[in-house]
Image 1: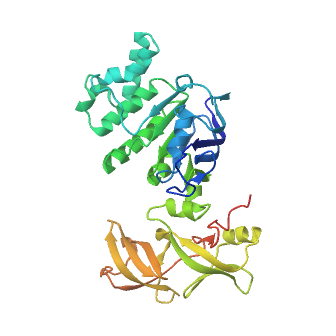
Image 2: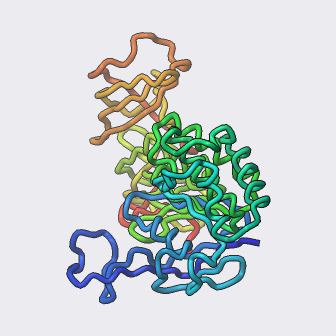
Image 3: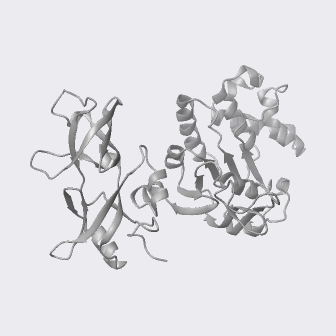
Length: 390
């Protein structure tokens, strides 16, 4: 079994020249800069976990602590039930795939993949068996006699992954392995990684700043900011129920629209949100969540995803705005609208349009939303007001 448990993991980088609050969003103490703080996570055997967040949020540092490449400043790390804080990297039974392919240019693809097994003095027959099995899984058998310079970026990344999986590690760590590839290759390699995790019995911990990768690959996603976990959940959970404004804005492409709005109660006591001319009663689920948390009427931040806005018909109360940019995306148009004193993005499906005039810059449009897709956040803390209180 290869469960990975991180209990209150902390990483401090001493920096005597760094003054508190200067040039960093990370917390600074007398010990130094807190790059990762109070990181708590239980990863199940064979689970695919993705750490995602902006540059400098501590995700790669966390991965390197699991790998043994960074010393753990505080907390406990367990792999397969054994504490690993002071165990050397070579004895942790993990493998790591880096952003750079890190292949030996003078070796063939076969020798690159066989190298970690030769270091273990494994029998030649077993080495050959493992290399060829990994090459078959990754579709690179025909390249085994070539040198890395003769392969494309995607092929080289497959070799790097192959070199890791031949070791049959308990845990496979991947640090932004697709960031050097172009968009088409990234899409292809994402599919290859999904196929791979179904063929090998190992636990995956994957780091990326690309939320599309996180949403498509992860069984669960860990969203980080400034060294702290913001939310842990399945892709659908973090998309449908973001814990705070940061998660809501980070997950989803294009990102969620935010407005200053008012949370009110209808005459029958139901919660509703008011934005300009629009009064929208919230869904039954949201009624229950807000009532459970005893949320009072008042100013809130309203969040609505671009795909959940819709063009209002003539009879519907609507928000008015002016088109500033119209982006044709094939089956849909992404409209950038100036409305409610802020920039709004709305996705309009072409199949839903009755008109063919398009959306020229400067055109006035009306739009609205429904109570099921509205997200209500605290104006002061940014927390989702529907969230179960700790």
